[in-house]
Each structure stands twice: as C-alpha cells, then as structure tokens.
Length: 308
Ligand code: NAD
Image (cartoon, rainbow, N blue to C red; front, side, top):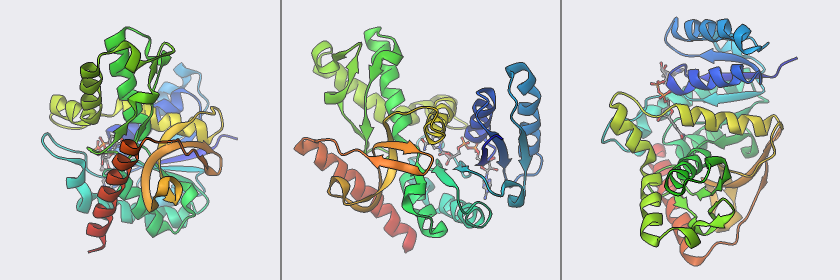
C-alpha cells in the first residue's frame, strides 16, 4: 500500500512536486485546485508517464476535498506567486484567505496528516495553518530553509568548482529578506568556506542567496521558481517517510527553543513520520542570535497584521 499525499494547488510548484513524487515512486498523489480541469489534466499527464518511470503510484486530480480524505501528508502550494518587484510579504492578505480555506478543509478530511506549508509568506502561512487546523504544532512544518540552503550550496559550487552535493550549509530564519545564512557552518569539499573564499565573495554569495527567489522572478517575469522549490518539498517528504534521515532547515513552531516562543521560523530539525521529530539547537554567536530574533520579529509582525 502506497502512502497518500495530497497537494493543494496544481500550479507550477504543486504539479512539479507531484511529478517528482510519482517519478520517485514515493506515494499516491492527489492534486487539488479550484480551477476545473487543471488538476485532472496534469494528474492524468503525470499518470501516463508512470509506466515510463517504472512507477506504480496512482496520480489523480480533483476539485473536491472528499477525494483527498485520509492523506498521510498534505502539501499546501495554493495561492498567488510573486511578480517582479514584489516581496513575499505583499502576498500576505490574499494568500491568507486561500490558506484559511485550504486549512479548514484538510482539518476535516485529513485530520491525522502532516502538513507542509509552501504558500508565501510561508512562515506566517504555517502559523495560520496551525491556528485554523488546531493540529499539534509538530505536524505542521514550513518549506523555506531547504530551498534557501540549496540555493546557497549551488552558488558556492558554482564559485568553487566543488560538486554541489559536497557542499554543506545551513540557512536559518524566516523565508524572506531576513533569512540567516551561516557561512561559519558552510563547508565545500570538507573545507570551511571562510578558509577558501575571500570575505567579499562570501558576502556576494549571501546576498545572492537572500535574493535567490527574486532573481528567478526577475528572469521569468510571469511566475516564480518551481523546480528547486519542488525538489525541496520532496526532500522533506522523503524525510517524513523516513526514507532519508537528514538534518534540514525547516520552519517550525518554536516554544522556547533559541529563546523564541510562539513563532514559526527556520531552524535545523529532524523530520519523521510524526512530523517534527527533533529541533536541533545550534550554539549561535551573538550576531547570529540577533539576526534570528530580528527574523522572528518580522514574522510576528506579519501575524499581527493578519489578526487585525
Ligand atoms: P501558481 O500560480 O503556478 O499556482 C498556484 C495554484 O493555486 C493555481 O493553480 C491556483 O488555481 C491555485 N489556487 C488558488 N486558490 C486556491 C484554493 N483556494 N484552493 C486550491 N487551489 C488554489 O503558483 P506557484 O508558482 O505554484 O506558487 C504557489 C505558491 O507557492 C505561491 O504562494 C508562491 O509564492 C509559493 N512558493 C513558495 C516557495 C517557498 O520556498 N516556500 C517557493 C516557491 C513558491
């Protein structure tokens, strides 16, 4: 029996995530969207590729939450993406309406699910999902840090010539302009990047990482990134399914960890079949702590705007 994963939003991120799950034979997939025909058409197209991938999963599309019932994992990608010049935070009110509606539905149809929140501004949307579903907070986790870390790894690989899979890094904080990359903990081919790259180059890479999403939006002009976001979601799914056992930066609800309380923010965690298995508390330097607190304050500011 395959596990069942529902993906809400059959747009660029949702459909690409469905494709990767099917290609890797990870789980049955239900794509849901409000637009009639789009989830059905994309699901059928992916299903028709499964014989070529030697994949035995079922992929279906629907406009009805009843078809998503008893999902093990729900991924929320529904909502608007940024346009050039827009910040993620500008999507707050319109995407909050979408996420509220989605969260209400999944709370009824998949009350035992683990939820991965992707819709931007993601940390605030994860908080909103927690409030609306009333699920235990360990079952709601946001995707941001895996993507930001992957972007930074790609940029370091491009700069050093080291293979991207031999680059390790950790980007903490909110998935936005105040994210907190940690060059101190970044290694390429086993060497710390502070030993192999000049400070000015590291600063450039950090700047490019923080603007990684905007760089793609600026190039595409009509949408935002989806290949690396979908791959990041699938990395989290493989850890929830316990196929992989990694430490990933994910947005989780902090209840005193890192001196922060009542806020979703990106920190290193281990995911497991129960959701967030463990929050790993790194020893942070004073400036890193301050940057993480500033990031958390910004997310809290968005939450306050949502309430009022
Ligand atoms: P997209 O426009 O391609 O797709 C969004 C889909 O959501 C559309 O098909 C739309 O019909 C659907 N939708 C809208 N309202 C809905 C509702 N109430 N119920 C179900 N479906 C609904 O956008 P995209 O590129 O796939 O991005 C989706 C979201 O993910 C955006 O908010 C984007 O900013 C965010 N995103 C986040 C990250 C991250 O790292 N957290 C990365 C990339 C994109």
